[in-house]
Amino acid sequence: MSNSNDKVTNEQVSEFLQQNPLFLAQNPALLAQLELQQAQGATSLVHIQQRQLREHNTMLKSKIDNLIKHAKENELIYSLFSECHRQLWTNYDFKTLAINLRNIICTNPAINECHLLKYDEKFAHLIEHRLQHNGVYLGRVNQQERDLLFSPATQSTALYLIGNSQHPIAILAFGSADANHFEPAKDSLFVLEFVRSLQLRLLELELEQA
Image (tube, rainbow, N blue to C red; front, side, top):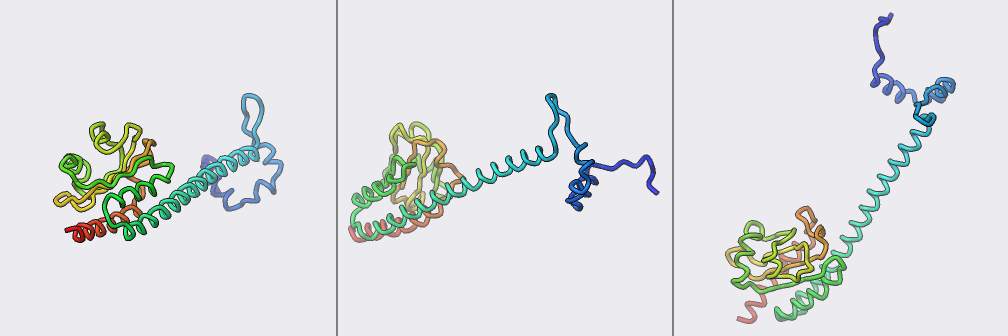
């Protein structure tokens, strides 16, 4: 026999109700008494459940909307860089390739600038500061760096070193007016694949022109 001093815990009640989901429905008199008093009246368990369901549905809708948004962004990025890959083998000089890449990439409304720039000594500090380790930088740049590569409207950037810090060939730079568009956690898979192909193509062009 249970001790009269024993107390039923919240966890035990919760576990019992989960294991017996029809308990309250089978005891309507008890359900009618389970009301939470508020200042202006009472809120039934049914109303609480309805509110929780609405909140849960709102959260799910937000997650689905974000998934759809990211899927559309990835589809656009894939399409743009597929076209960029084609340009690598239909352009036979650096300047024409740079212009065509800019025209393609800037069709993305989130990107307002795209520059493919041959390496110059003026980029040495930028490479040392931003691209020394893995050749990639996503995020904001300081005023001096922005003046070197972009217009004042650009607030976040993606920089890719073609070659390496010891033997730089070029810099591929994207700029966005949205300060949060390029950030370190952003997926760069499509871009990195293109950068590898671009590096091979630029080396070929150098050999052809040598």
